[in-house]
Amino acid sequence: MNSKSAFSLVELAVVLVILGLLTGGILAGRSLIRASELRAVSTELAKHKATLYAFKGKYFALPGDMPNATAFWGAADGNDGLAGDCDAATITGTLTCNGDANGRIEHTRDSNYAWQHIANAGLVEGVFGRSGSPYVVGTTVPASKLPRTGYLIIDRNQQWYGKRGPEGNFIRVSKPSNNANALAGGVVSAEEAWNIDTKMDDGTADGGALYVMRGYPETSSSLPASGCVSGARTDTAITFTLDDTEKNCGLMYWVD
Image (cartoon, rainbow, N blue to C red; front, side):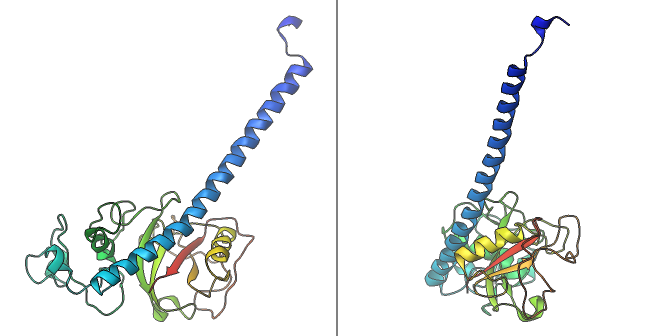
């Protein structure tokens, strides 16, 4: 080989240094992007909670649970807007159905209309229709800054989630999964969940307003045996599994 066409050791060293800098920059850039996404979750949860309170203050009811929604926006069934015929009707524009006013945004019925009622009230950007199941991120529920995730408003009771945390209505940050609930997948790692919980709440997986649960994997309809938090969801106390780097955690933020 002609020595004039070969790379010198100095040139090779310069190339390696450049490649190292590029690799380091890419990794650092990814970390910064992820940190920005996680900060956005805290901001969005607080914003959506304030939006729900604004709706309740204006209409004296929870979105989705509102018993006189059709008086403001019209009945999808052209009649009384009650379950059954109304749920089966085609939703167009702001036409909607009434809730049962029991104080719970129940899965799946009330939660199907919650974001539509909020959008009809002009309290959120975008137009969201009745969702049913599966929920569609960006179409039936608002998208999150976390890739492929969205915000579902839904109630949480002791029978469903066991003994941990308060009952009430929550905003759930989740993504599509093979579970029948459709938006029940894990979205963050245990360390990321702990970080968000520490900044927003009390830093515990099973206390305060931010409740951390094990999310369904996208490839399975069953909860993983381990990951995100220790113990089963019916246990009275759990802790973060901080050495689990997989995105096995789902987030639920108490709002009412």
